Length: 254
Length: 239
Image (cartoon, rainbow over all chains, first blue to last red; front, side, top):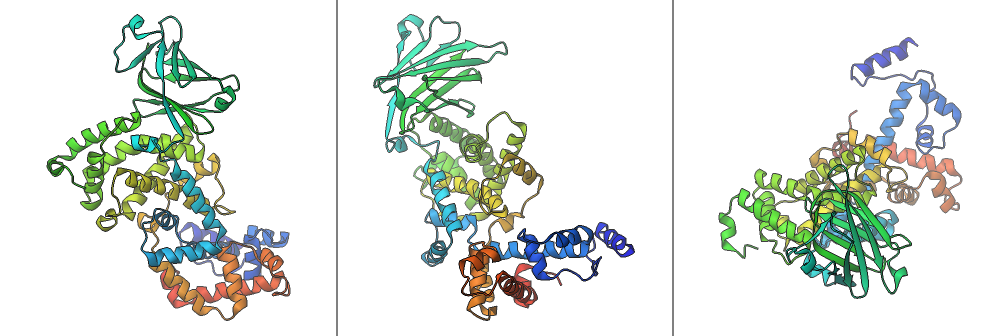
């Protein structure tokens, strides 16, 4: 007990001088390894609860194993540079060898591939590579009726009736309402000949301050956003098959 | 990349303004040029220009947060803790990006898109590093685990980029200290595949008498490696 108190005092002082087991015999390395693998028997766990010396040894052993694991596998950065083809051939072939035998690193590269596959925001030229990108046009209320500038479609909460956009047979209705806090909400509806194609579509509202709101088209074709800051924005609706409809330049005004 | 010779005469302030314009058009998916943003990156990485670097950090933070980090972690906006987690990941990403690149490596990048791909790869790398320390390795962490992680200062910036040479040296030392095929098998299965001795025994029952033998072999290897002066130096062990 005195020894244990002394050990604790030494630990508190930041010194690593735990020289003795609190309840000998001290645990073997195999027992400690089993403990780290969650395979130790209850006596070992009890011992470790009581003995800072053996607990410290277990901690060091875990650290050693982590260090070895860290050096056996290519770092996540190396896997990334390998994937981006930024590595000299000699290093890349070593990574390839490792990937052949290591399912975990293979999985990380696959995960990275998937993550980088959607390098959003993407450039205009990248849009050409998408399955299909449609730019919606306003079909009602008409520009003449509302007198807005051609560069942007202002969505005003006080105007009567919802705004209707159309792109290749897909009709998008947006109803903008002002809330009490000076922000806006949008209730949207997607209607198309192949309506089921749009169920589960991801809707993104990209705002001028670079924030993005996300919603999902429900089984009835509806979606909604709340707490929208007034300002210019872009709406994108992407179907599960990758067809994207854009309303590129809208101005949310209250 | 300096297609526009006037670029070099622009101040960081001018570049920042034009890069912000480019980024706005980028987000609106209009046709855009990436010369100014690319030049900012070039100055930051090749010239180690701190002003350019600060501008980049500010410029791309919202994109990283909303387009990359939150979707990758499946986090939603509005949760204060989630925002802290996102900020920490972005901070570590910038550290990693900064430490990983220099003027020589910068030659790999032909345009802004390739640079952003690298930056996004660094986001993934930071997230993967935390997942690697979890058990089982590389599983997705939940928000509670991320909350704990952000309290941790994390690795020193220079440790974020473990060199190929260091690992090759380490592996050379380890292989040189193994006595037989059984030990090689235990090392490979334990540290490359991350299997426990029980799993190794179940996989190769004909090679070992029981699970304890696998533990014994692993214990011997670890004790040998821990005593090795070269490895002590490489891993920074204390006696």
